[in-house]
Length: 263
Image (cartoon, rainbow, N blue to C red; front, side, top):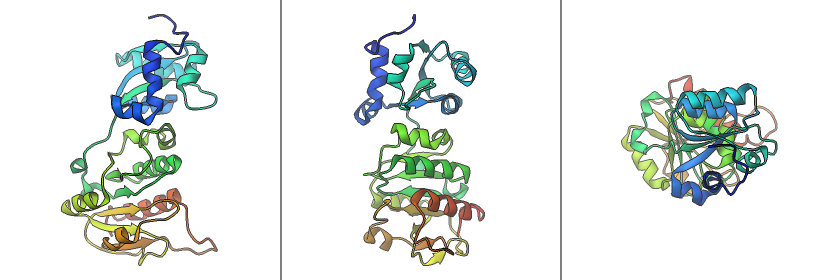
């Protein structure tokens, strides 16, 4: 196939549909942009097609070469077509079409680290940042509840900086079902809260932890928090009332990681 010059091209149109939640849901695929995340997607062997500006050099050209070496179809497109496919204002490319990577909850191994449960998280940047922190802290997985932003939203994917391909992701589920499943797998359930009962640096228990973090504006619903085995807080020394979701998650994940994902 030669240079693609129109966004009406069938392959480009199919990829453009993945910019919408409905398109991602119906196709079971999503878009990944940028040389670093594309390389991670290639390592995970989930790239099914890649679009590039053939005049690009450096990391972009290297990522495209890695795709060709992996026998992934590479489509050459003009800069205006690439701009249509990309989510960033000044896209470098490449843009890859990838198969979804989420797994069922019974695939998680809580003994390997903390399981992070995100409840009604609406900000894609926060969700992506928590996935990145979970990966860095060696978490056993990230579970994203119903009513949260789509894991495969382009902003989530970008904010995760490739970590979406490193840590097991469970997407969608009712809180009660998630809690039951994790308890059945030996987890103690803890709510993250500014007024948590236990200091995350000092709490002690013997079971793997599932850490529940709530909505950015409202936190966890009272009934969800009441169903937990306890709650954890980050101790504050300055005048700040609380940390934002992504910062609190990072601090707690690394504090728990020091004890092998247990409290």
